[in-house]
Image (tube, rainbow over all chains, first blue to last red; front, side, top):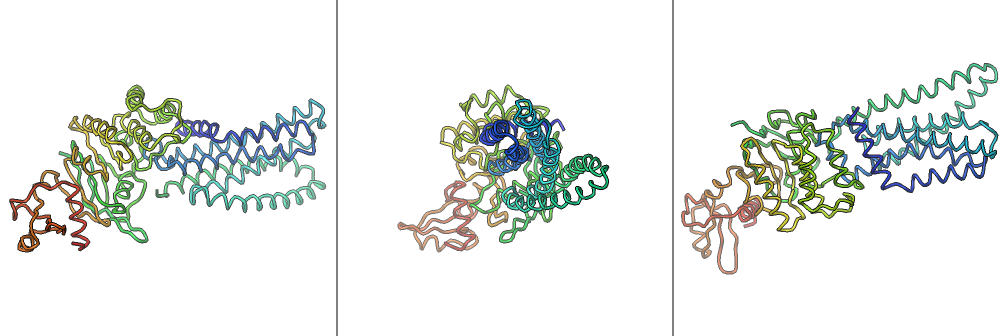
Length: 213
Length: 281
């Protein structure tokens, strides 16, 4: 894990220098939400997705520079490399979610939106959705490369959004009758998302061990 | 003497190209030059030795262990420079040193810094903005900084000016002074290989056309110039290739049969062998 952390740190440094525009966009979205209020909540939500997707940029940069190949000749193993990228994905998503939460608090404190209204469940739901999306796309990236995985990413997002709509519909119907369902979903969904990410990581390690350069 | 690299029947097939079967040994303490035209299979062979590709058949032992072993203790012993030097593009030399250090137990940060300074690598510039020569120098510094026993180098002097190449060859020459160290180096710049190699392995269309001690190869083959009639009169088995020129013919010959032949350089040997192999003489 120490080596994976070192690789993730290097990724964040590299991303900070090459993708400042992404970080700028995230901060801008949060600022717009804080100033403009509830109607602009979707912009705040985007910061979670952008945070998670920075891991795609990290993989893409490595493929372009050849680091994904060269790193395997150093003392870092294929497993270290994959774990590093999952750390970037997880911390990026979490960072985006924390920024979103912070923006929500600021917007509430400054009286732009009613305190806590709708933000927490939406934030949680988005974070889970992004983690699930990452769980599907990252193994594809390790198998086919980031360019192809990015194309599949669009399909994955459509499927997840559609799936989330169906689940939300069923959930709200059930929740109307059984209030415990909402509480259960609030626990099950994050746990399922984290579990799925862990399983995806194991799958990616397996895939990457078989990849040839 | 144990072999630093031992390859037996190594084969790798692609859609339009097959490498091997290759049998090759690099004795410890020696330098082997891997030569051949573009697409001959040099980089594929190096990828197989590094575990970046997996063979379809045969095996390769690197320092007595199976190629592709990703244990840190093993990687510590092998320094690598690839034809495409790849480090994260925005990282500076010092940051790359810090990135590599946790993996290698024997990482010598001071040596890495000294090599970077010696190569005059800019401190504030990201790797992506380096020239190809600078990238190669940084790769070489990284390969040497963990005190390896074996260097595997794919075109390490490509893109460097003659002075820088000479400087780097000196570093390799100093590296090899210790009898337990070895180098496998592929290059198109045969004059570089001629300076430092003990052994030559000549790949052509995925097969080993020739391998052996460099000095022995140079003793075995020679270059003979003469009129078309004189060259045509040579015994068939002695002639390995003929180049027609405006003033007569040049023939690559076995010096046993033609003792008057002049010593041949690696570049001429390669050109003649390829022409002979291709039947273009």
